[in-house]
Image (cartoon, rainbow, N blue to C red; front, top):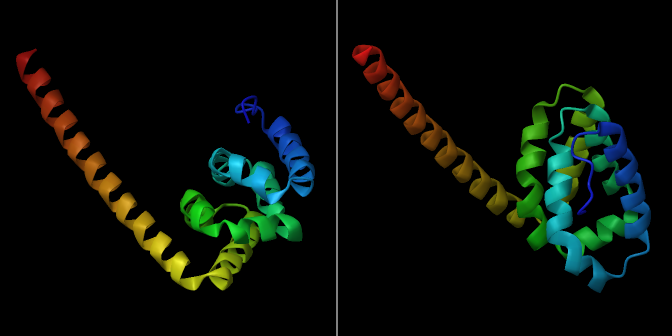
Length: 151
């Protein structure tokens, strides 16, 4: 994770393939040690505008063993990726959109109550972020107006 290729989409796709092979050999205890930073990276991959990166990240949920690891730790994993899954609902690529719908259904079937709780929390955070951006834009507008009157 330390050497994750942030600027090269093709390498990200390769890393995701290697990650799947490593996760297949990972025991549950080892998985728990790396799952938080791992799923932060995966959330970033899910949000990727490059469809191959997003698609390859979503393909991890086609692996039954990885799904079982995720299911055992869904309380910690779902809050990390729900934002990415919600944002991907409107992804421009149809395959990514379809895979996102499947992963969302999978999480809903695992634990509907947890899904709804995490979704409400994410929506609340999004609303707070939107308000903060509006306040910042208002301050910039005031500052620009003040700067234009002084020049």
